[in-house]
Structures are given as C-alpha cells and as structure tokens.
Length: 158
Image (cartoon, rainbow, N blue to C red):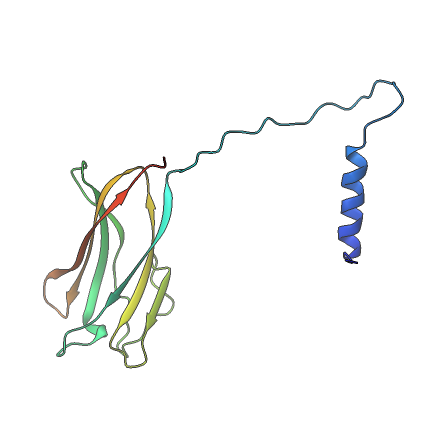
C-alpha cells in the first residue's frame, strides 16, 4: 500500500471530484475545458546542446596562460560568425577554474595535475544546417590563435 502525504491526498481527491459528471439528466453549468492536443514536432529547433572541450597547454605554458578565450559559431551560409562566449579568462593564476565562473561557461574542471582544463558552453542551434565552431585564445601576451575548429551538421528529423 502506498501512502501519500496529506496534502497530496487532498489534491488528488479534489481533482477526482472535479472530473465527475452528473448522472441525473440535469444540465450542468460547467463548460468543456478540454484543449485539443497540439502537434508536437518530432525534432524541434532550436536545439540546446552542450559543447564540452579540453584545453591542454604546451610543455612551456600553463592553463593560466590562456587569456581572452572565445567560442564562435557560424552557419555555412552566413557571412559572419556569432560569438557565443568571450572573451573571458577561464583559469586563475593558480591554474584552477575561475570562481565565480565567467558568464557563458556552464562548467569548468581542472585535473589534479593542472594540465588539462575541461570547459562546457551551452549552444543553441537555431535550425538545421552546417555550423563551424572556432575556439580561440591568447596564450600569454601573444595574438589570439585558433585552438580548435570543427563542423557540426544539424539534421532535421525524419
């Protein structure tokens, strides 16, 4: 036997009482509150996707050397890229994740040796298509360099 908290039991009884229809042929003053079911798309857009990537510094650098990190997205047919995140500094002078986490990052983890930083960004894919993502950062005081470039094919449902 399952026991419900008292408040749940009361709510359940009220809901059941409201659904009872009169049995005597007298017209009821209630109106039909059924809402027709709306068609739900099988493959809705925009889609929210987590973009998770690792940053590993070269042997002569540390995680703290990555400055002004940016993540951009560009649909192949578009003329310009959209900046999703950045510029931001995800790591501290101690090679740990910046706290509070910079706006735009949904997760940051550094391994125990402080040699790999894992970052996550939530991405909204607006419609089916092919998208190019570029993750770039400055290393120290140098110019921004591309750390990672990849393509994503967002396909409609069948």
